[in-house]
Image 1: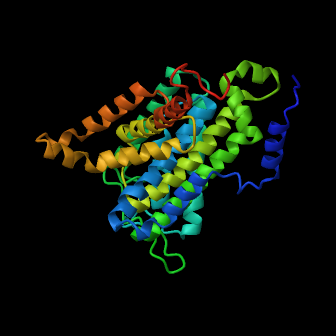
Image 2 (image 1 turned 180 degrees about the horizontal axis):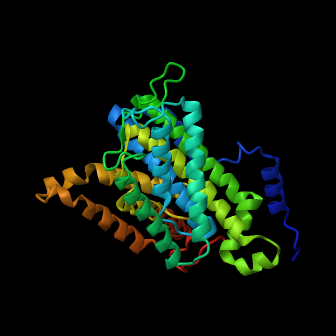
Length: 355
C-alpha cells in the first residue's frame, strides 16, 4: 500500500489555498452576526447588565484561562489586578470624590491605570512563579486578601470602605458609552479583541514555548528557554486583560470599592474559568454567561420555590459542582465529549471512519 494519499494531499492543498477568512467555520460567522445585531433583538437590561457584565467577567477570567490553560498556573489575584485598574482610573481620572481624584484627562489616566495594574500583576507573577501547585494558589490568595484589606483601611488614596463613585467613561465622538447599546458594543469589542489576541498568542512562538514550559519546564530550560521569564511574562499579559476588564467593570457600575476586588469575587473568577473550561479562550465567556444568569435570576428562583433569596450562592455552587462532576474540563470538555460520542459506532463503540 502506498504511503502517498492523493485525497489527503488534495485536501491539504485546498486548505493552504484558502484565505484565513475562508477557514473560519460557518458557526463562528453566525455567532458573530448574532452578537453584532443583538441590540436590535434584546432590551436595555439584557444588553447592559447581562451581556455587558458577561463580556467583562469573561475578559478578566480570560487572563486566568491563559495562565492556567497555557501556562499551568492558577492565580486568584486576577480580580485584585482588575481592582487596581479600576481604582487607578478613579484616582487619576474624574470621580465624585474630587478631593482625591486628580481629574486628569482619560487619555492620560487610562494608560497610567493599565501600566500600574500590569506592574502589580507582574510583581505578583514574579512572586508566584517561585512556587508550584497549592502554594501558588495560596500566595496569590494572600496577595488578593492583602490588597482588599489595604484598600479598605486606606482613606488617603483609596477612600476606605466607600471607595469612589461617579466614575464614568469619557464622552468620545459624542457618544454616551454608558448607554445600553453603546456599552454593549464597547465591552463586545474588548472581549472579542482579547479573545483573538489570546488565540493568536497561543499559536505564536511565545505561546508554544509557554505550553512547553507548562508540560516540561526542565526540558525547556535545557533547550535554552528562560522558564521564569516566560511565566512572569504570562502574568503580565494576563494582568493587561484583567486591567481592561476592571476599568470596564468600574464604568459599568460607576463606582469602585474594596468589595469589588474582595475574596469572594476573586474566587468567582476561578469558578467562571473552570465552569467554561480552561482549554480554549471561549470557555471563560461561556462560564461568565452562566454565572451572570445564575447571579441575576437565582434570587427570584429561590423566592419562587419558597426559599430565602439570600441563599442565591447555593444555586451557583450546585451548578459548579454538577458541571465539574460531569466534565472536569467544563462546558468545553462536555461539548467535546458529546461530539466524540456522536461519532462513535453504536455497535462497536469505536470512533473514526476506519473499520
